Image (cartoon, rainbow, N blue to C red):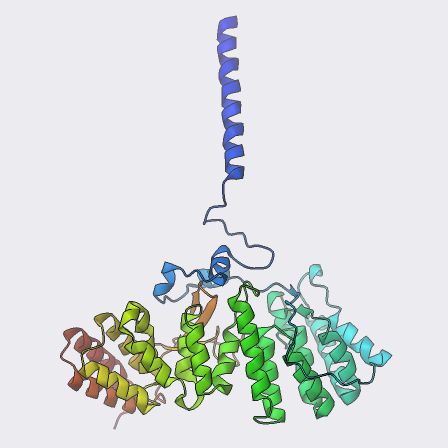
Length: 430
């Protein structure tokens, strides 16, 4: 009997030692890829790799996000402490009047939002919006107090808070910049310019660029491009981990020129989709020559397929793009893998940088055919909409007819005929 008890006791001790060893070994092992935890700064492990220039094989093919996948894409937290920027190109700031106690109190009331006490209620939102209105009504007298807060380099992200949409603003700093825009005048413009030259928030740079362009068309474009290039340089060095810089590429599309195209080519290895879309979207077709060069680079392999797609998407607007496609088809220089992409560019999903069409928020209604995409490498986010009846359908059909005459490739013919059938169904009846 004692021997049996001894044997049982020995087995239990061995089991206990084995269990302890297993837990000890697991605690020393790296977290598995299935772990859904996110570091405090909001950067996932995939994004951390991307910020160091490492791309994912899964990013080679665009795939629409499911609602579940979309909800898991890392978002910025509610309270943000942006990375500092030296503002080396900033103009010397003139000495201005100090904030009055009253305007300073008004700004403090706007910043005194406690997200730890549950969602923002309708009553709280109305009170907050009224405070913002009162501050704006102070006119130039409110500018020093707003400037004082913006220099503190702090941000509250309302999109990350339940009920935040009731505030009618995307963030605290965005609300104050909107107030400066409404106030107007040289004092407000000077604060916006100074903020443009020091902020690292991509969406803020885009907002300031638009506001300053309204104040003085073309006057602040160089400062805008300097800010964009400086912040993209910081992001390329991993100094802005987890940030989505898509709005900076959209600014380049709007305010860039032929020299911007060269910069976009340099950014393509890290932000392939953003850079290629931006080349296709540069004002006046300034990026089309670079896009053609990218598509004609036979050493790039399948990496140039997306360049062909964006050429096709832009071809109905720019003759240089359509002529390049026809020439490449006639010379049989378009690989089979690219023809499906070209068909998509002509008749399928039309890609744009961003998470949704402009002016559409979380409760902004649905768009027929809207799809969203997320690429881990470079934290790239974009959406697509189908070609609409006003999408130059007749020009697209004409280009398809020319491409069909220029190629005998059966893969190309099948893809182009399918694109033609899709577009033909969108032509208005005669």
